[in-house]
Image 1 (tube, rainbow, N blue to C red):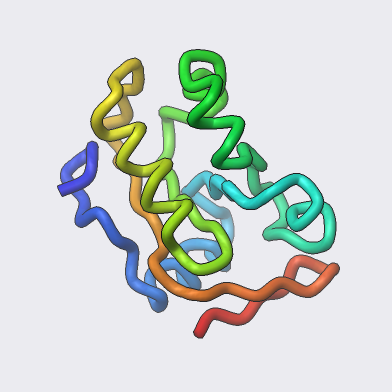
Image 2: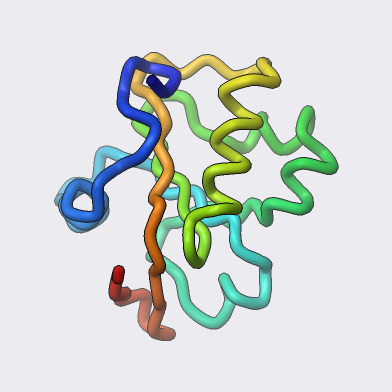
Length: 117
């Protein structure tokens, strides 16, 4: 179980529903590189590239929201899972709303629309 009592992985259907909800009650953590983020991302997503996240954990964890459910994604799932596990095991983060990661391939258009396979 994820911090906050949720399953570690968010389903594709739940991810889509939560991202598209209005008002959005989740924070989206995009752990892809800054150049991939700049080429297209979910509007309002927070970009914390996984390599920087792991190298500067104590600073980067302060940028992860705590008052809302947090969904982590990358391009295919492994980097999102790595950031999820760092948050779940390294400490310094408390979020009763929970965190989850998307374990699926996601492709972005410059306007922020996306497709998940």
